[in-house]
View 1 (cartoon, rainbow, N blue to C red):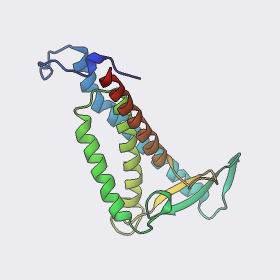
View 2: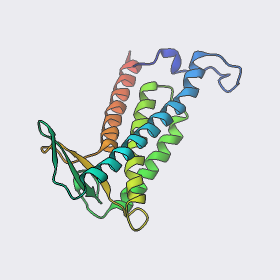
View 3: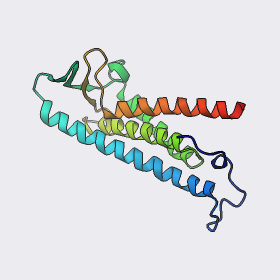
Length: 182
């Protein structure tokens, strides 16, 4: 998933619409790739949360396989259900992260970084939607969690996307550092 060296440096004429340099085409496609991934994560996250609310409300946990079970919970705090009640603060941070990623995606040239940004942005938006629309007041809603491994805190699709995106960013940084030191 590494980009070729030409994708890291853009020609001086990259702003002209007639430029057909491969790096320019790659750079223009990066924000679109990030947006498609973010929207896909958001939709998948919200659909699975809707399913969890419909299928699991007022029911005991459902065994799936091995230690995996569906177990509906609501989290008004942050990761691992810590700091309950700080949802408004977490919601503001999530908005800032999404805005920062959207702004910085414009200058990305790496598909790996773009995928990572899309996963993190989509996950942040998925949990942000819960905080906005699943409560009585703005940003006071609880995040819907339902994937329970019984040996790890209960989570959702948005959480998975954020974690995977974070790991991909670390890989991207490590690969970029390795490329720069050669």
